[in-house]
Image (cartoon, one colour):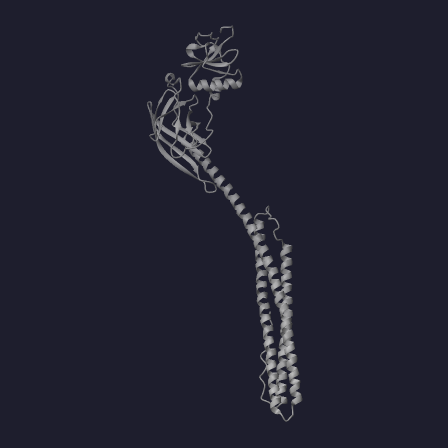
Length: 451
């Protein structure tokens, strides 16, 4: 009994430590100080037991269960009361957690470990596996050795992801390893680096601490494994990398497709604006023609008036004056022809703008077809205020109608200009004949229609 009358039960004994409990807590004592000040204490719960066993089994890889009775305070005796749970349960509880943070694995492990307090007393009967495997997010490490007595020699292979998705790859390094095993303590040198220490657990695994890039440490557990297990882990890592690359590539493709929709929508909107602008230019050019026709009509009136003057002078004694006036009629007819040339210039401007308008119509239709194709690739995405079929159809129809009207109207103006020129030169010819003067100049070729 403990002082104060509290019952003390020892469940497990090791080479240097004992595990048990009293009424208040699970406790670990030094084997020679059971019942006195404990080395560690844990809450009297299942969680407390698991924590106590985890610490105890780390110090005592090969403890002995107490099978009967109880051990009085301060009196380590032969095994006493039964622990009450199968040995394999306690071993399973004692497995140390796997890696919780990674870094600095590829290109050389940075390992730190401390010797177990009970290592010098541990039995040497633990099985040594020919290979140990550690895995984590983005890496696989496989340690493989041969042992000749207490000495170990072999290599470790580190495979880790590198780069960023969608261009992530895996890189592999194989480097030498040497060390020794004494009881439950493994001393290892990775790539001729200084020795580090690990402790074999009852399940054959061992745990070391990995130095992260931040400078902090994280436990890394190596579990017994075969080369096939390593190959399977590498295959799994490759699948993870491939999946990450595929996911990133898919996201990038979607982003690019959405950007293409935005770009095509902008192109269509710009073409619609160009259509409106070119329609206005065509309209302005067509509207400029009547003013030049008016000037031509005025000059035709003058020409015809001069021709009437010549007709009145015909047969008079002063034939020289009559022929002079006939020459004036011919000169005025040339003025009408000049005015017709201005009309032709205006008509050519209309035709040039019509050509650009038709180019813009074709460009708009092509750009909209491209936009529709881009939208079909990302049906879930719709830019704000993107031009739709109705807007494009309306704009194209309006432009087509404007072009047709411009052609018809301008060709009417051309016909009028040609008729005026014909009339003016006819007046000049009539004047020359009336005064029996030299033959007048023939009328120029009529202006061709635009299309």
